[in-house]
Image 1 (spheres, rainbow, N blue to C red):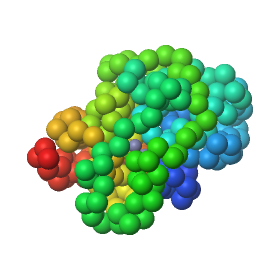
Image 2 (cartoon, rainbow, N blue to C red):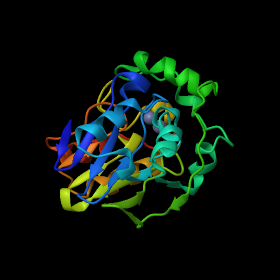
Image 3 (tube, rainbow, N blue to C red):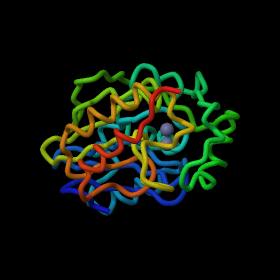
Image 4 (cartoon, protein in one colour):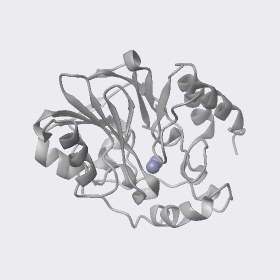
Length: 240
Ligand SMILES: [Zn+2]
Ligand SMILES: [Zn+2]
């Protein structure tokens, strides 16, 4: 699915309808997250459909180190040799040296569609969902540029959560700060670690005035995206 010129959304129902994004800037390919499945099949198929080869993939950017987004990473690194990037706080989880942290106190709080997410959250909280580990090659900070995108440090969902903005195409990649599955919201509540940071990150993203927003779980926002982000900021409560 092409959501803007040279921006392809990929994913199926696996990993909580997780999505990844392939960016073609007419020079190289840049990938944002790697989907759930360890064979990277969907990403490789999309590369083929854009008449590219896996050798054109130069940058693999990770929004954060949660299992659903890391499945294809090791295989894509092996096949492409692309540089792998994440925030410093997430890198040792990506490399398999530390477990991601769950926010257990929100685990039982219901929200629209939460029963569909619940099994994934339980597996996450128990640390049952390993991914094939892969070292991170380069650490990213707020304001960095990689390929066509600008890096935004957007903590809250996780401490080292990153969003990416392709300014010329006005497409924001919001990671798990925003979801549209199982319902539209500010990420899955039980996995957002710090709501004060999360709210500030959403507010910053809403001000970008993006035309399209790729989200971590569910289909991208392609209409009224900026207004919908603004509406989300108001839904984030005060700190628990
Ligand atoms: Zn996440
Ligand atoms: Zn996720």
